[in-house]
Each structure stands twice: as C-alpha cells, then as structure tokens.
Amino acid sequence: IKSTGSKRKAAQFLQEELVRRNEEKNKLQRLKEANADILIVDYLHMWLKTKRTKIEAITYNGYETRIENWTKHYFAPINAKLSTLEPSDFEDFYNTMYEGGVSGTTALSYHRLMKQALGYAVKKDILLYNVMDKVDAPRKNNFVASYYSKEEALELLELAKDDPIYLPILLSTYYGLRRSEVLGLRWSSIAFKENRISIEHKVVEFARKGDKVLIASHNM
Image 1 (tube, rainbow, N blue to C red):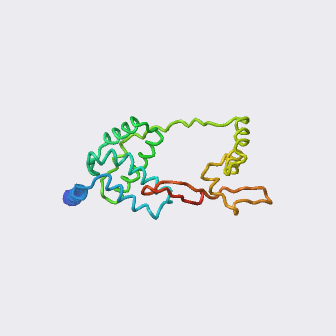
Image 2: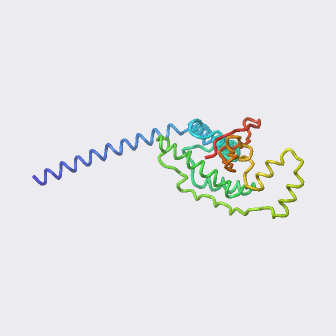
C-alpha cells in the first residue's frame, strides 16, 4: 500500500512538473514572439501612454522629455530591442551621458524611469524579469547650496525696487520660495488677518512639441 501510494504521488508530481514546464515553454515562446520587433524606444512610448491619466502633466512631460532626449538618442541608432536588453547596455548608456556632461543625479532619474517602465513590462507578462534589477543605480550628486549674504540680498532688493518683478524677488528672498511657488500664489492663499501665506500651487514652464507651455498644479 505504501509503495502504491508513493508511486501515485510520484506520478502526480511528474504530471504537474510536465504541465508546469510546458506552460513555461509556451510562455517563453509568447514572450519571444511578442518582443521580437519591439524597440525599447517604441515600448517606452507605449508605456508612457498608460501613465497619461495617472500622473500630473508636469511629471508626464518630464518622462516624455527623458525618453525623447538621451534615451532616444542613445538606443534608437543601435536599434535596441526590449527583449534583448542587458545590464551592460545601461552601463554604457550612463557612461555616454556622463561623457556628455550629465550629472549623476540626472542619470539617476533616467535609471528610475527605465526601472519603472520595465517593471510594468514584467507585470504585464511582456518580460520574464526586470533587467534593471541587475543594473547599479547612478550615484546622486551631493547638493551644494549657493546663497546670498545679508548684504547681497539687500543690494539685490535695492536694485530691483523699481522693476516689475520686485515683488517675486522680495517673496523669494524673505521666504525662500521657488520661482514656481511665487508664480503659483493666489489671493486665496493669503490670509491677511492671520499674516499667513500658504504655498498651495505652483506654475512650471516646459516645452511641448517645440512650444513653451505653462502648467499650474496643486502643490502637494
């Protein structure tokens, strides 16, 4: 009885293993066929469309800019395909960026975009694994702040007192506001009785199809 039970379990295990391997083989074939002619740049454009309604316009434009700039300029000429990407491809990509004067912080933003995009391909069974998991992330540059002394700030305000942009300069100087935050100020953000200004919105300029576009968004 024990022997019969063991044989039955062995036969069941063998059957399950054959089914698993057959499914894996078919999956590999599907992946191979699906990715045979998909270039990485084409895939990134497809992936970006899935993000249009999920992220802010400013973020979307940032992704689009990264794809159209260094990513496209590097991967398009070599016809890099999604299914054949290797860690060395991205290492060479980052080195090319460094040689072009790109900082580690900027290269890191490209790395994060690629990891997110290829992670989506894994989620949708387009790829078996994310090659970016095997790529070392670029090192972020240490930020060194540059600031005006008290004397320099007072001199700036004196020079700008008759200029139309005096108020934005004044707000930036006293409160350390970014340009986007000053431009995003609204009357509703100012509580005169409480002497309080709330930074709730921002306005950012970016390029879209060669034209400069201003986008106002809620400052989370």
